[in-house]
Image (cartoon, rainbow, N blue to C red):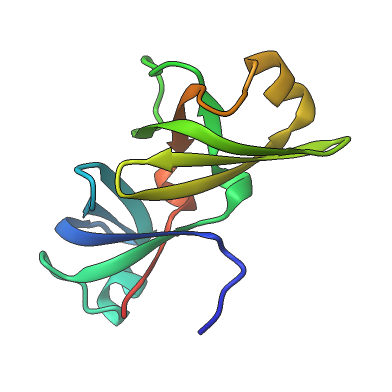
Length: 139
C-alpha cells in the first residue's frame, strides 16, 4: 500500500512492554540505531508483534524535530544522529533530508528554525522523534 509518509525505517522488534491501554515496542534499526514506539496494546496484538518481528517504523516529516547536538534532560528518547544531505527552503517551511546510519529521514521544520540552526548540507544534526509519533507496519 503506497503511503504519503516518507519516513519508513525498517527494523526488528527487540522487546514489547504491554500496558493497560498502550504498549512500548523497542526496535533495532539497520545501522545500529534503536527506536521506541508507543502504540495501543490492541494494535500490538493485531500486528502479532513478538521479539524478532520485522516492522517498518513510520514517522511523518512534521514529527521529526532537529537539534545540532545530542540533547539531555529531555523525555524524547528517540535521538538519531545524522547529517543534513539536502535542504529545500520555502517561505514558511523547510524540508530537511538527513542521512542516518542505514537510511534517510525527512524533517519539515519552519524556515526560521532552519535559519536559526544554521542548517546546510553536511551539518551534523540529531533527529528527535517522540515515541508516540511512531506508527508500526508489518510486511
